[in-house]
Image 1 (spheres, rainbow, N blue to C red):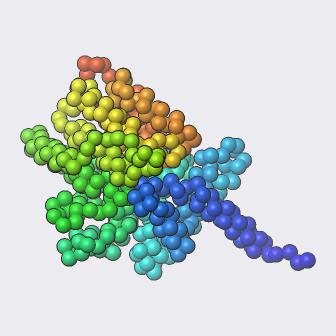
Image 2 (spheres, rainbow, N blue to C red; image 1 turned 30 degrees about the vertical axis):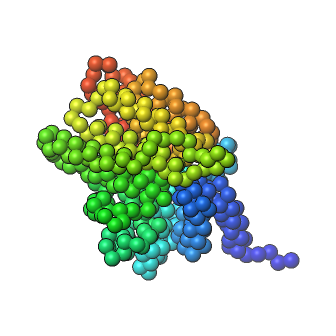
Image 3 (cartoon, rainbow, N blue to C red; image 1 turned 90 degrees about the horizontal axis):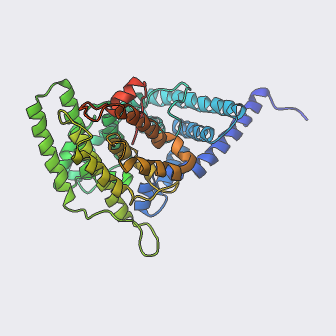
Length: 412
């Protein structure tokens, strides 16, 4: 029997590994990426969407297989096995970049956007905070994605009054989510802040599909965008008087979003089935409280030890108790909320033991992706702030801690 050529054997071996990683991705990762979107659709809608892109877009496929390898590595013990997995991670990482170059050359903007968003978002799904394999930053990928969003004229499409009945394209909803919360990670204005501002003022269709995708009402997300803009204005120079006037105006906007929401409660019916509408109400309330914390942190002389701020974190902790926990819960979709609220929690705050318990319920999943990075960051923020004297009015911001540690996290 004639043996196969060496390059053919290597190809067959790679194909076998790719198939295993594909199956791993579908079984262990796909169901966890957009669970809120799936609960709102009452089916595995995101899985259908992602699998469709995976089959038609080779660059995106390599991105997904890289994610699968990273996730597998996080759940593997032993240096020999992780060394082999590292090779798979880098093989697919480089392959996705090479395939991206080909897409850009052919000006296939839609497929390029799918892949660059995947590369940016994947860093929020898998990997440890101290991963040492070479990779571009999430922000570099995302800036490329934003230029493609503009080339495809998606902001104009979703802002067009003549198209108010049109559902926002999924890829624009995802881009907006990363744009708004990613801007808060960097202390800058969101790229499409003007689009979100127009949506706030729209009487006909203020939605960008954010509530359906990630659980928070679009109006609250748009206000978070405005707060991010205000922070960027503060950085470049704004009088305290003007700053406080803007803070008061945004506080009024936050209060207007409270009118339609009752208090949080467990999102299950009498049969124990999830009630998506109640889940999104709970998530919206949590984001709204976190938005208040974000806003108040811009006040000159902000001090987390003031009773009003301690009370705000306690209210947030109460709301988060009504979010289902564990591997099949939704804590990983509230990482930004945990970061913003937790970053100002004082040593005896109920938030800290509550967060520790939530991490324990997640098991090994608490060490990777969004939530794992947030946990490491919060521990460091608490350590540095707890060393300050009780009388001190100074406060070490979580972003300053990230910069001092040279961490570049996307926490959604």
